[in-house]
Image (cartoon, rainbow, N blue to C red; front, side, top):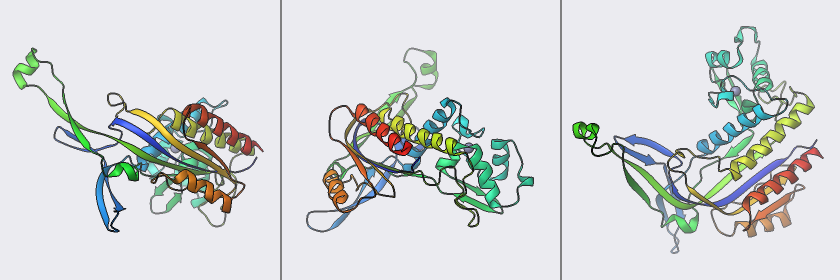
Length: 321
Ligand SMILES: [Zn+2]
């Protein structure tokens, strides 16, 4: 078995989406916005506030898929009691730890042991990291990395956010006669968004926190391989089933992937930013100069789902060796 670093960058057209809402002010629900600075043609830099989907939102969707795939694995892979329900409190204090793993920490001697219990018994926290914040702080960095989905450079200046009016009560019923119609607004938007996620299998199933024990493998080699397979299957599902974002029961967006690049390497090798249109060309140029046994898979049209499925199967074969 061989470890792999997978880097994915893409551009996805999302229409009529409300995938990442922030606060509601009275009956008005706001879409997340971020400031973006871009260079104008005259060399000045201008800030635009534009709709965005946070990395936390993408990570939540991804970890939910990892949890489901771990349960479906044959035999199932271990999950704590909270992560198996999609509640990612992730060992943030001693009472959550006790609830998650059904054991108190009284027998645990030092930081490495706490990490060992968590990594050994929960695939989501092994892959997605955790922060145990008690008197003693124990941190495990996530083995995948994602960030904000933002409008691409050429769509950024023209993107708009539109509040859509909805009413909850029907006219002609006593509820409306007594209280009036209940009106509410939901901000929706449409844009060509960037998408980014990287993942590194090096530390999966291994300790990382305590300097004396870092690198020690705490699950069997076979289980480690199966956890990496779950990670790869999960990213496939994240992409082909649009597993990111919320509010999808009534604001299911129209999704169209324009392009995506998937790279698999022996060491960290990231695909250049998809913010500008030329990222595929820059990916090819980078590969001419820098390669860590890097394979790249490029999608620019056709069946997105078939492309992703093939690329991930190839990466699984690469990992199997
Ligand atoms: Zn967990």
